[in-house]
Figure 1 (cartoon, rainbow, N blue to C red):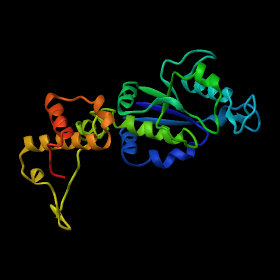
Figure 2: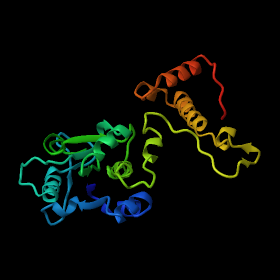
Figure 3: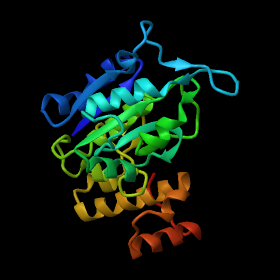
Length: 252
């Protein structure tokens, strides 16, 4: 998997991509990341990449020319040629980034991420260059750099071979449409608070059942909206019905 990130501030990414899972994935040759400074593709001597908006108003708008030139240079495109890989504009107006979207993106071998900045990006980038728009949430950020980091991290985890445990991605929160069950480690009792007995029992089937019910309960209590799209078995639905009716009490 290869990521091309177009940004005005490439140095922002250095620490994030040189630590933890993303670093190991890069060192293993499973993921590669190229940072492209949009200023390098501005043609004036001051390397200007933004200008005032037509029609007035506050803030500055990123100009279309440097962004188009960067994408075309990175992908080896002729002027006006359509890209054959996803070119994603990171924008608060885009579709919401979810685990499902991360899985969708992980199926591609290459992604181009355009980091907007200032008041926004010239609309012609959205209309004639970007093939997709993605937002990581309904809040205001300074630019698209942090969303790009989020997408790279989430998608990298789904690349085969990146995580040591092949099943790890399926147990993460949101991976199966549910929040993750609680985790415990040693000591078995800390300040008088014990680990649930079922986790010490060695009974694998009971542990699996307990974890599933904990995930269902936690999602029901904290993010009930997720249940509408989660993959639920008949046993899951029956357990949830008991939760609704207040008939279930399980270990915390």
